[in-house]
Length: 437
Image (tube, rainbow, N blue to C red):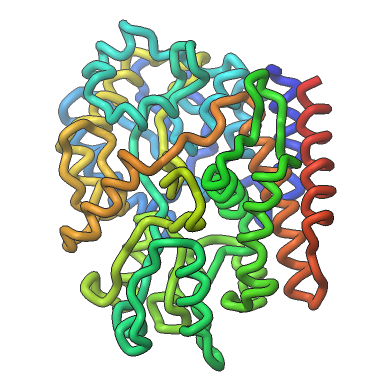
């Protein structure tokens, strides 16, 4: 599945984006002449705004230029646009030298042949493969092949809870799904809800389809790379997640309008909800809303009490890739080495609230050592990579958007049954199989 699959994925994604494919500043045209004019770098939006990211990254890029003499032309791209921008770059040939990718896209993008493999020589140029956390480097591409991306920022999901609300209700942090639901019900009253979800985000919904399925012992693809979205474990996991709004009624129906996780985070930080399921980069928005790190706690996303696994997250994060068409590969490798140095990781870890991707590095995204230890443990021991198959991006688009629609049905007063979910997953399977065929 090469360009045909990518084009199919792009068509699906284009229907789901709320913002047209666009960006600010540089157009993203690759410096293909190799004449020393520098590198073009597309960075993903990690902070509170595109401008905030530019302010954080610029001093590091200036430091890199002082050291190497290589200027870096930066463009920060929002998540609603980034995947489509990359897909357009792949098919048009008008690409940057270096780009941030969601690590879940790695195998899909690798299958296009548009990205430089990190072979032994390339890894040696950036300091060696062994410097990275093993779980992080495994997200770089398909198993058994040289990866076409390397880790940059680590992330993991956790369950944030408001300590004062829990104490007032006489509750302890939940350690099972059943406790999560019962706590959320006890904390739902009037305009306050027990939990907020990004129910209108296809990426968030797809992530939790994967995590809930994993807690059921189910996989999204079989050994041959064929989708298994309609299997009992996947369907039951999605039903469990949808029921937080549908039957448990601990999530406001207004959450169907939450097209990104920030809106749920803001509800938590301002006391409108007692819990959120979010990655550790929620900290920036929590602090910006005036909530301090001693006012909340974090525990792993709990599985059902009869689950045989402690999977609580996918191995989330951002990777760096170099376009194969770049005429500046040596300079690009120098940049990747710089961005994955411990001092650069430390400088960016706090403002971007990311977990270190380097072995032995200490998390500095929070001033709460207990929170840092919890997320580091989730990332290293309780996270499972999303499927490392070329069709992973299509899984996110098809399943995530199907869940968007199901949440919308619930929010408008309708009912979503197990059969409805299975039918939607069979449709998603057919779409992915047709694109691959």
